[in-house]
Length: 145
Image 1 (cartoon, rainbow, N blue to C red):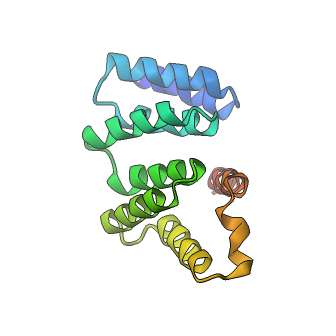
Image 2: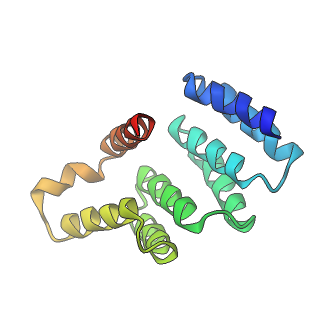
């Protein structure tokens, strides 16, 4: 499994998202309990705009016992991209419940509260394009760390 994961990680890190998603899917087919591969596949599918498929993959990762904080955060982002704000809020709350130190979930909930309160400086933060930018920014920050 390690070799297959390494190959998928290299494709992902090289920017070949479709290939990486396919390779992570192959890992899961061979190792059904490979939750990390499921989450990576879901992330890539979400980034590529295949939201329905990403949703199914994330749900499978939850059922398989993956990190509830991270998977619920990703589902929150997914529903935000779909424009389903109430459902996104629910998953951000689940993420924070699973991991009270989940800063990303806390930030998303704070933005949603600001928007609901009519804070005009927060409105752009709910736009899917801004969410994608923020995800890319977080990924880049993670690579520098």
